[in-house]
Image (cartoon, rainbow, N blue to C red):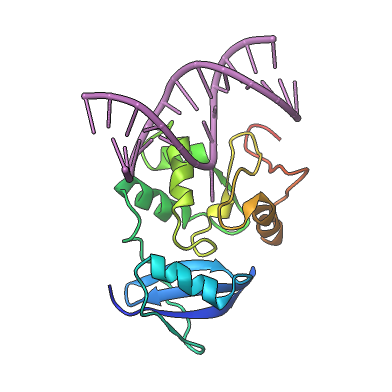
Length: 164
DNA sequence: ATACCGGCTAGCC
DNA sequence: GGGCTAGCCGGTA
């Protein structure tokens, strides 16, 4: 495991912690966390040698190598292609990855997302339009992020194709 | 192999 | 709409 750098970067959703290596961004967390808390997380990921970098920008690429399971990596990659201002359902993502019906498995893949924010798992919602869970800050934060991106969230719900 | 788990869904009140 | 239940699937112990 190479030495990682990390910084508190300004994003469209406010300050977020990012950690990266030459292989790409490998960890992220909301900026409300203290530096110590984020570094502790890096420790858990085996990035104990991470050092603070104040000027460097995190790379564009994302490192999914720590994600267990080919299906989960595939799902996260598909998720990263969801445009800002749009949403997909867990089921749609499952179908796109060749496993229609694996909506629940997609949910667990989202929960394994090493770089929330960068891989926009907040844009994945339930089939009935309810927002669903968000492990990187809860459904409340999920809603805030979607609204900030211009998604119409009404009464904790988002418009989905058929329904409305 | 086998049992259990989780950011889900579909069907039925 | 809400609440509940039983299926569902990939992954892990």
